[in-house]
Length: 560
Image 1 (cartoon, rainbow, N blue to C red):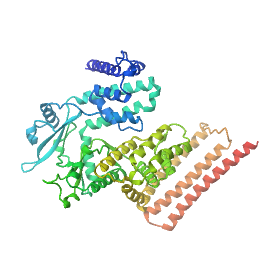
Image 2 (image 1 turned 60 degrees about the horizontal axis):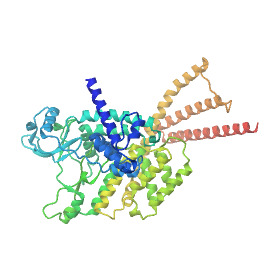
Image 3 (image 1 turned 90 degrees about the vertical axis):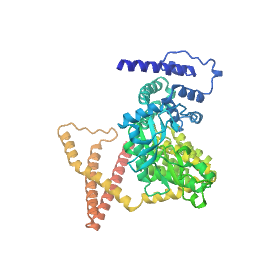
Image 4 (image 1 turned 180 degrees about the vertical axis):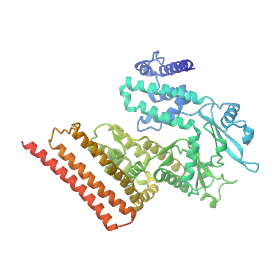
């Protein structure tokens, strides 16, 4: 079996090599050590680089089409012309036979299609590279039958993707080693991100879990809905969801719905996902947004148009933000709303991770230059996502590595902003977002949240205080046996400073831990706040004294 797999891999690698040479990437293939002959003729006759990359993805099939589609959103890494061209990639594949789909359902769910469904159609309503979708009727019990969308994974697609992923990792590593100028695009990093994303798409239980989490997050939002999951008819290869019988947002406006209301509600729901829940739909394009219910004959009545429900589908690709990253991104967006470019630069430095020393002043000037081309416009003309993407590109130019989550967020905001302006061209994204972000900032500094964070950090400090005696015993044992050496070429008193720092840390941690314990118990509030203030004063005094002593010793050394 392993030999057979190895032969298949060699054949696939040979196919990839031929496609690279066919589309003018012979030099790249040769530098990677792949043999072949360039068949594209003179360079002057070749299509542009971006077009040739798209053609390579199309020729290599579903895995690489998906790779191109995902790469098209990485405007922080890839040039704009390449991203624009890769967006043209489509899952243009013929559907597999319904007989194959039925076999997948029966093998995966352990029951016949007739046992599970009241009716199952002969043809799918949609088809893509990973799977296809059928509109069927699911039998809940003897009394109830519901309309459902049944998503069935293509037979054999798992093996195809696994094989291509293995080769993709190998090729990405070869590119980084053989072509140093390509390292700026982080081929191995992109390959890892794609690996995680496409595996999540292949496992339908991930999308089911996402749908359930979104439903829970929006339980108090009656105007937003996500499809109900039917676990009894779902598995890793089959996903059965509530069928949304609605229409696209653009069609809803044409039928009489209020475009302004829809646009602003779409913005608000994405803001809630991102900044309140930290869990958001990463691809909210118009095809994934429906207005429910579908309009009656003749269009929506005025009273209907204001109460339409927004339904979101295709929940496989999601983004996640930690509370810390959320706070930093809010700082960035509020700085943009204030047109404060220095604060925007500070926020980006906090969000990113520098791969080498950054000239902060030069970076601030670059952010100022990039932001001002957007901020000189009126608020309603500013495209928030485009501005964020420009600043992200600027950060990358300064070797500041930006989290993937921020680029996914930028894509989501750009997509929903585009949807909003389709149905309401006057949409002012920043004006709609500002009150929402301001309210979240107020919640950030609410006493309850601050108290919760204080208790969390107190727990960490208490754990440190508990461990300190053991750590100090280990240090003293090393001193007794001559195993501990403290060296400081600039100052012979480094060990004294180390001792002072350890003593100060023990004392401050003990005082702080005692103060927090008293605060939590509710006893002796005056004493607890006094101990807390004393611990902070001692720590501040020690830091100041330590800095002053070090400064004085260095000044003395300079005069000798």
